[in-house]
Length: 157
Figure 1 (cartoon, helix red, strand yellow):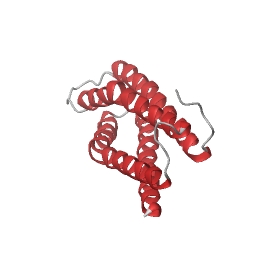
Figure 2 (tube, rainbow, N blue to C red):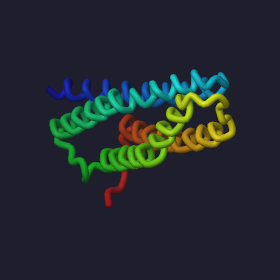
Figure 3 (cartoon, rainbow, N blue to C red):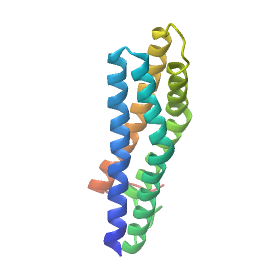
């Protein structure tokens, strides 16, 4: 049973990171394309993924991780690398939900509004802000991944 939990956890992590990296790269390509239709399409796909695929990956990560930790007899709050990984995962989620996701929706709305003249200056500001917050959220989960892989001995408050 332990192997199934690990498999769920790893599949969830792969899906989660693929979505994150795909979004970060897609945004760069959309910026370079200088075409509102590509911007609209890119952010529409990002929003679809964050509505349907990201929650599935998060559930797989949590169910698999909690199950594997439980089967291994590891405490979630007394094992430093697990605790701090969960804290970072939560911080990433808060950053993404509070900052990056609203910007994604705003960019998609702006790009699909059908205006004759696309406001590239406004898009640039939104895109840079989205990139900043998305990268910050990504770094938090990347550090959590490093903790999961190397499992250092970390203090528990």
